[in-house]
Length: 123
Image (tube, rainbow, N blue to C red; front, side, top):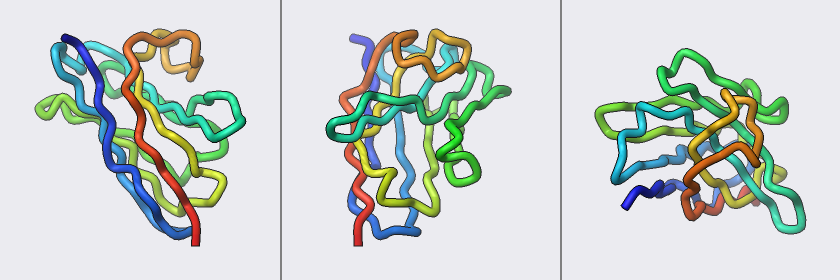
């Protein structure tokens, strides 16, 4: 069964860092662009970052540019989201998904989704 599983979320103070992982099972992640998305309570799901299948193209939401870095490790079938200088407004459930929008961060143009991992930024 093909699935994505996120991990690495948690509670962190403002200014802190977390690294999220998105591990694929049942298929080879290298063949697909992968996006990270987030959803805070009462808000719509939004695109955060994306990396193309070859890793040559990345895209970031303006709100996270310069603070978040997306990367992939084919040997581990994993995509990472390194999050630095976290702010309370980054608090949300974070999801990874297969991207079908050529890394345009379109929530509706996605394939398989993971179950999400919660990130809470609070002092």
